[in-house]
Image 1 (cartoon, rainbow, N blue to C red):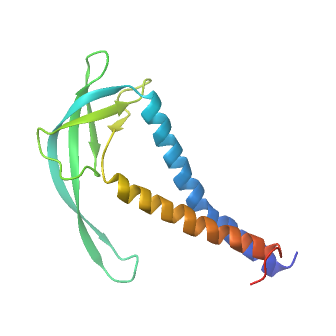
Image 2: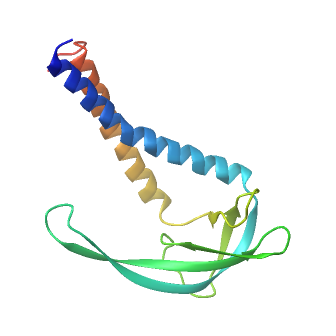
Image 3: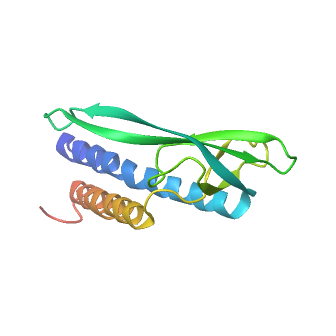
Length: 146
């Protein structure tokens, strides 16, 4: 195998890391949704932070809304959680929380963010980068010509 083919193979494998990671996150969330207990929670505090990024070469800032919520686990103990993906949270809003059976301190809201947006984004990562990665691997192995 030539060094160019080896580099192409490594690039193809690197491109597959994103889709594998996204599919792993998705599988983990589905497993949690089916296995973790649920409780009714309430948003207790909402605040906004500013995040800046210069990944594209231009400096951009965006506001991120955070929410702190409380819920009682199965044993009646009050637990606290935080997240930054609820859509327009307000103090006093109810939300459904799922928590780990081993430690209820590990928890997250059942719903949050846009399911459509998450599906489109994750689907794009899997289809685009997965397809590109497979194509580069096949080209490096000589199965397809470029």
